[in-house]
Image 1 (cartoon, rainbow, N blue to C red):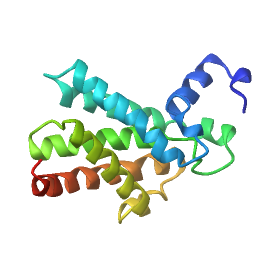
Image 2 (cartoon, rainbow, N blue to C red):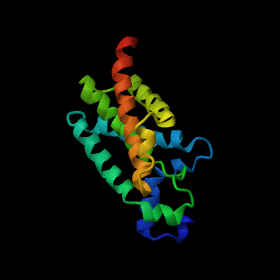
Image 3 (tube, helix red, strand yellow):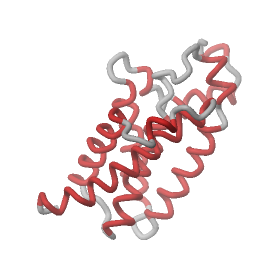
Length: 168
């Protein structure tokens, strides 16, 4: 569907779902789309240093709920059940990675931590260890969104385990 023929609301939906168009990347749209999560995570950490956990939580919660409610829009916009252009799940999954790490470790990620979060999230999003893979079976946009949140939890926990071994 061309964005020119969309209503203002549908353009807004498209913009969020594709992470500002990052999901249109012809190469690894999920990986490129995760960069939208990095931008959101780093920006909120910079803008709200004293309340970053709350800021990440609100952003993740609002974007998660929004994404889960987009089943009809996704069906009429893209023919695939889990279209590559839909990368809002990666954005939220990255935020869940940061939240998990920060809550379990009790520290905010530095630049290296954000880099580690990016790679850890991508690894777990691609591998989808159970129950993440099973969560993809949820109907509609719920199945698109929920598995990435589980991958984010795995990624945050893996950072908690591995970063101290690297002296971070």
